[in-house]
Image (cartoon, rainbow, N blue to C red; front, top):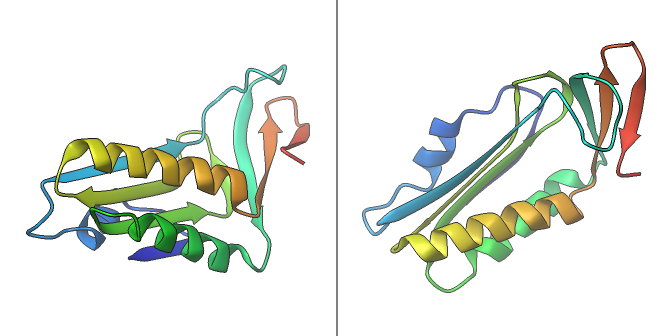
Length: 137
């Protein structure tokens, strides 16, 4: 099990290595990247600025442990970035290994949704016109 709040680049290969097992017939991954638009905002997004509560690492660790405790899960790895990320940069990576694909997909999707709902990390969208908007506050 691996979880991390990082101010450095996230590597998918590190997450794949963390969930590798001879028992794993399936590994599902999710990579969330900064996109150049937000349907709820007028303007072009040039980047995101993520900031985290001091408890963020503990919350992410709890969520990873909860996912890893589900029956049939072999291993879980999840990381979230903080700091200023340009468009195209990876903001979150999750990987889940199981014996079969369906469970890997389900647990990975559930983990990402739980991270989005519970992780005390906030984002500020940076727009091309120089303005910025806090999202989700």
